[in-house]
Image (cartoon, helix red, strand yellow):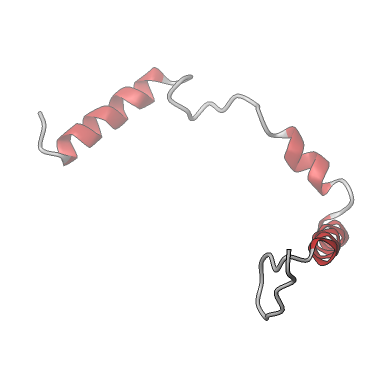
Length: 74
């Protein structure tokens, strides 16, 4: 793949530079937020949220009514 030289952000066809940029970004985040930052935010994934429709049918019912009224359905 030809290396596209240009300014701005994003992919420019240079795998090594893209990798370095990602690594530097991760190091900067670790420096400002602490080395365990990514572990903390990763541990929250997949946990059950009390605010979703699957776990709160009454919330889903109210949202459905509200949406129906907004479209003129009664």
